[in-house]
Length: 135
Ligand SMILES: [Zn+2]
Image (cartoon, rainbow, N blue to C red):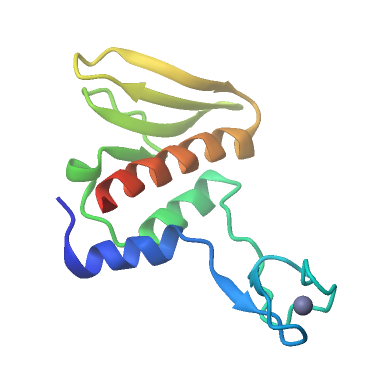
């Protein structure tokens, strides 16, 4: 289980950050280049850091400071064979996103050449898992 400050860190890590528009004061997403309300430049703009590659996913994941993979059951860049696991790995020019169920049966969620699509599949899954942990 994840408790306390870790819970807060996760919330910050997965939540989309909001900033105030300097011009009209509206609350906008920090990855909006311009204010959606008045069109002014977003001075607090930060590039959307959604991971696109396995490497980026790995560094995003590491930045969350989660407990070990023994607990999270998320395996990035690893073809993990045991039950209860989510993971992604590269096999030649293919990217495979998998889930191993309780019985150890593998369910392939994605198998193809599109790395950013594969990475996003697992990225969304990780966010879903984290949001459940938070509750
Ligand atoms: Zn504005």
